[in-house]
Image 1 (cartoon, rainbow, N blue to C red):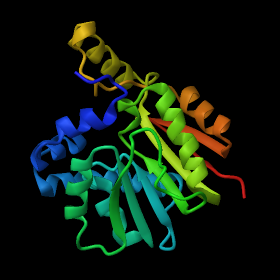
Image 2 (image 1 turned 135 degrees about the vertical axis):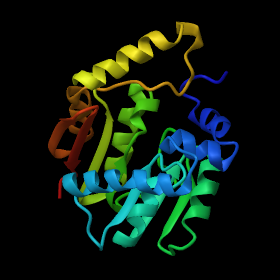
Image 3 (image 1 turned 60 degrees about the horizontal axis):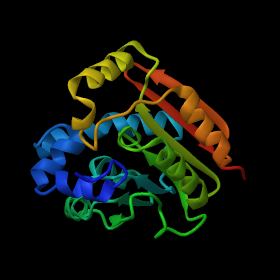
Length: 223
């Protein structure tokens, strides 16, 4: 079994077929249902950092382009980044109707293919739960690097401090013996944790909010 930090091996293993990839990123093997799951994420992005038709947007951990497919028609350009080559292949198949959208493979620990100050929005949804804490912060730092001055960043994770988030944590605590935990098992965050990452990386106007199971964090790169 690969280590938890070997995200590339883990997610290539989980995405050997398109149907399996759909299941692990969206909880369904059905294309129509997968598209429907993106609507909520798009609405949260709109409500936090906003969506403008001139935005050049980057997603960290794009999977099969679940959210990107919902955003492509709303922005100038969308680039999805994922550690899994299989996920990237499936995403690009699903995005063929959009000339302004593409997915690229990254190492799993950075956004090195992307230039400094090249994006207006960087976001990551349903991804931090699968990352170690250090790698969450590394991606926040990478988002800061990739964003233009005034650019916006948003991320989310399961919250440890809401009632339903705590139930989720307890369920995962008892579902597996310590040595049997899968490498992609979800780990929670607190608002304070995400706030610290964004502020330490240099973001301003940092905000957090909890919504049932989730905690959101977002901020702006200084102009």
